[in-house]
Image 1 (cartoon, rainbow, N blue to C red):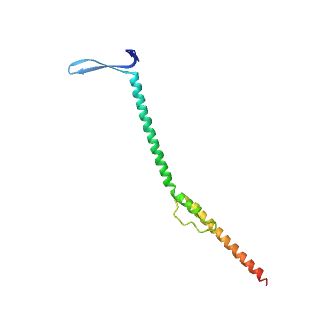
Image 2: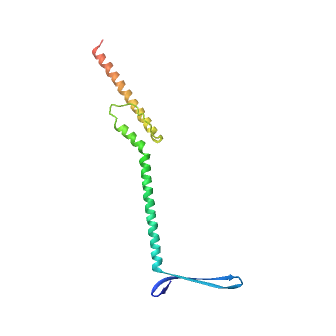
Image 3: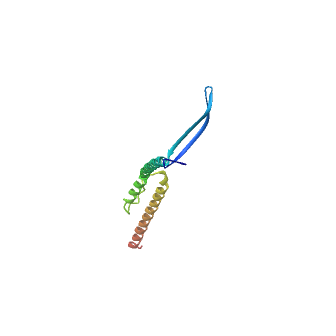
Length: 137
């Protein structure tokens, strides 16, 4: 650090032994830069880097959002199909589902089958009981 004409500057002086043809000697290179110029350059680089990082983060967030939205579409379709069923509809769910939820759909179908069978057994029992009450002999 040094000062030149009242402004702080950064100075670098480099000495190197040089041979050109048959001449040998020291080469001295001195460079300087005002601290304000250096700080402005660093600030500009930091702003560009921050803008680039922000735009990359926004692009990544957009890609992830679309990916999740597209990836969850089969699950949302399955939810809509289940949601629009009537309480009396105990048919199996017959629609393509992702492999990740195939087990859940199979379990639901099995449960629907058991409930359907239970209702049928209940109706047969009620029918038999009603028949027995009408015809006691």
